[in-house]
Length: 115
Image 1 (tube, rainbow, N blue to C red):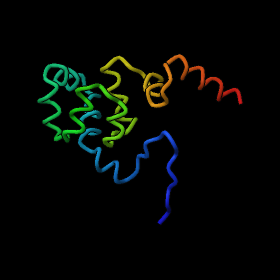
Image 2: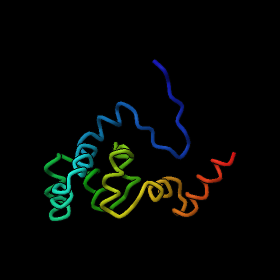
Image 3: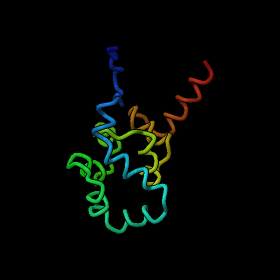
Image 4: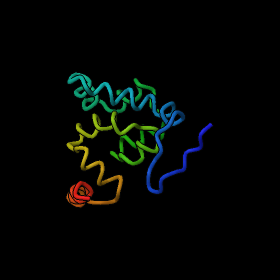
């Protein structure tokens, strides 16, 4: 079995994390549907409960804590659907993950592309 070295500052999304995050990711995937987004916004607690989110996941959702959602097994690809409900885009989330502002993160991306 291959051992993956952790990358400092990153939350590894692997098989166990995918299993842990399944309810959260399934809920976020549902946000592809406008009625699902409306249902969530109308009664967030009931919507989270209907997908069987853990207490950790429900707390992260309630607090709008994207980093805690990642730690609770959320996949950035599915969390992007939730971030959209919050008015965040992928660069906003990248800034949150790295401790940068959105503008700092965008500048960082441009700088990396110039190398």
